[in-house]
Amino acid sequence: MLKTSNLDVKKMTIGQMANLNHISEQTLRLYDREGLLSPLYRDEKTGYRYYDIRQSAQLDTIQYMKVLGMSLKEIKIHMAEWDMGKIKQLLRENRDAIDEKMRDLNLQKMAIERALDSYERYESAPPDGAIVMEYIPKRQMYVTNTKINFYDYDIAEYEKVLRILKEDMADHRISPYYFANAGTILRKDRFLKRNLYSTEVFVFVDREYVADELITSIPSSTYLCIYCDRFEKEKEYIDRLLAEIEEKHYTVTGDYICEVIVEMPFDYTERGMFFRLQIPVRIH
Image (cartoon, rainbow, N blue to C red; front, side):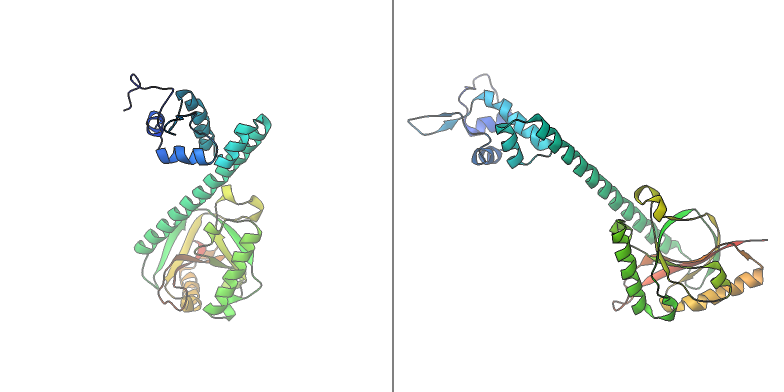
């Protein structure tokens, strides 16, 4: 710690000024080059320059304005032409930028939590082909009608469907953090008739970050589920769900959902997915 008792506070070297204010000499040199804070005195004989402790007030102002998010260029302007109105406007803009960054970071954190949850569900999921009954809580979706019946095509066409979803999300200013594990919906009447026609794809979203009019809510329910490890198996597994419903005399109460639990590179030539195919039912 620098002792000030024997220090000539009106004639301090750059090192003494830096130590006294807990900053680096490099920072002081930067402020000098930028014309923000320069040594007050010059020794005519040696050419050495010295700071005065009273310049600490100016240094404190510079450091505080940096904390408020102002650039060195902005600080220089405002210190030369002090305008309270302009400073307040700049601070409001910085505050709004911080709010936006916090929103983005929170969305990123939530995306990470969803990804961790997906991996944990995958690790504890029943094996491929297993049929189970599960209670699934209420969920919120953003749904896009792609105008393409993906059941008529292979996974290459499905990739085109996902591009439509991605573009539609961008048009509605929905965060790309939600573009993960996209799923599909087959409406109840078509499911029961095994009419495999659907053009609707979705992603799960959070109500606080997506406008209410863009959200489709799926109520909590008991679902008959079958787990599936290949895109090509879905049609066969829909038949197995229908057979189970008929055998057990379940009543279908809503739409069929193909939910992607996790994506992973099963095959680097195409998207690898592990699905939970699900239909809400009532048990008599």
